[in-house]
Length: 269
Image (tube, rainbow, N blue to C red; front, side, top):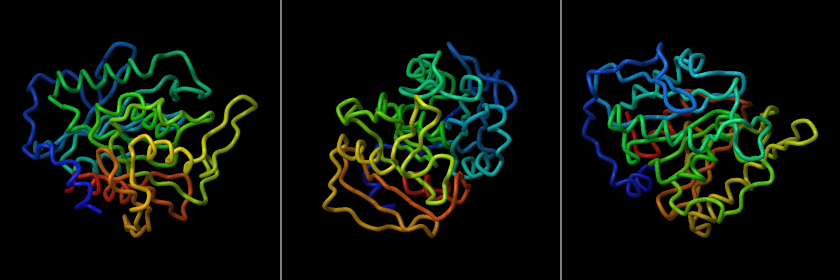
């Protein structure tokens, strides 16, 4: 598994990045961009290979996400900066979701631009991720501007109904590792209705959208093991493997899963 994805990500530079000494923001102080902000933690040893841009779950925030130390420290251990992007009142305004009010595509593009200008994080050094409704935001980001990321690692959240059609997404989709629990009652694998107007999408159908658009070779699908979870790995997509890891847990994003996911997409410790 690691070999396949590493082969697909040969353009990823392994030399540490040089970060400007002028850093007016960080984990405790928000980095402002047009329409919002983010927070960032940098690896302790200065050996920065890239950045993990993370979208928080419902009712959380960038500040609260920075308190999820197991995820932050695991990211830093992989020599990646950890970025927590701030949603709108604890949520995100993606297509067909219950919260609207901000052009998230434009806002997230501003975040990517600021990370490049301020820290030198180019697309080949950027991994996107998220949990729950934040994972949904990551999926729409990959769909809408996947060329701005080297890979995606997400937990417990996918598209919402009606699902995008494959041609609604850019062809340049990044490699994907997604973790989802069979006991997840908050965002079940099959999705669920939220009130009378909104409906979470089916995880397997959502994955099929990305796999079709990325021209993955379904006939070459194989089993791989990540964090002791048997996962379905579909290789030979346009830019790398598309992996679904279904575990027996609930609604969660664990550091050990993140460890396996980041390693699989080409950013080992």
